[in-house]
Image 1 (cartoon, helix red, strand yellow):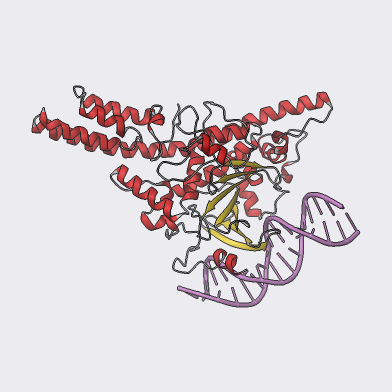
Image 2 (cartoon, chains in turn red, purple, orange; image 1 turned 90 degrees about the horizontal axis):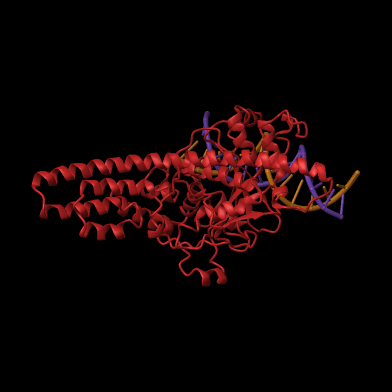
Length: 445
DNA sequence: CGGGTTTGACCCGCGC
DNA sequence: GCGCGGGTCAAACCCG
């Protein structure tokens, strides 16, 4: 099964491979087998987002009275209502599927990486000579820890007791991480690998749907802005932590680095981010294929009118392998010249490859768009302009309550850190309290 | 009074 | 071994 995530900004080319909504269109067409003129022309344009399906159907209904009786019109309207409900339901299911796919794909990548790594290990033992350092090998330490969970009996791996040796964690966190094989297999690698999101935002933190408690702050070398340390407080012993720091070069850029996987149920918005960190970390740990997976996964070049570029980069200098999702900088001139429409049509947010480390953008079928795109939306949610535009657009498209994944379950204000439940700044009890920690400290220190 | 924040101290890994 | 820097702890403090 192949699912392509549709976004309001997606254009004509991509709709061709969205079976989910095309099926809906077909069903609509079945209800109108004789219609060939207006509706078809209408759908040619409405298809471009997929989400405009209902609009298309509405226009179809409006065409009907010319040739059908009132009873037929009523029946069609009933059917339209049913289709709308079904549309909402299916979209909900799709949403869930995409999240599940994100996690499963991350797990699959790790499993595949395990096999590849074992193969490489055996080859290196045979050769007995140092091979050139590759991205694959660079990230191996973290991956090795991950694989210990699944194969504790492997002699070359450290004992399970060393699983968390690299990071100080509470006993509760350790218990949570090792509570189950599945949990551990997804937790540990992400405890090592990190996902960093760079977003231009005035807010002290991007709203990612989780509750965070600040446990420390430190001045980092080379950056006048302090780095704040947060841990997830949605569940006792949740190992997820994140660091928030303003960019030294541009104080408007907020760098949020996530580490670990949640050990508890998450609200939709938080699930998006959690899946993203997991998937992105897994992609990172997948080695040389990582960059192509990210690059092609975000915008499959075969399906998009835009170059398959993104802002995912690997960091070789970080203590842990890190995926950086950069949503801040303008496209480089060369890329901009080659891709004049390299933007989210709706959001107007340029997406690009800021670094040259991602060298190839193959037209591969490999896809990991959902979680990555959700990260983008989560990060973009920190920007009032983008979120406002996004909300308005989705609302207009859906013709109903916005299902914006950035909305943190609530409408309007929740997008912009107004969500009383998910607002990381409110910290449960003080939504009206002005942001004291990050923004204040960043500006004052 | 409970929960979150602040901040100095401490721990640990790493490079020299 | 030593110093440095990142990450974490925990007592003090703040706020509703």
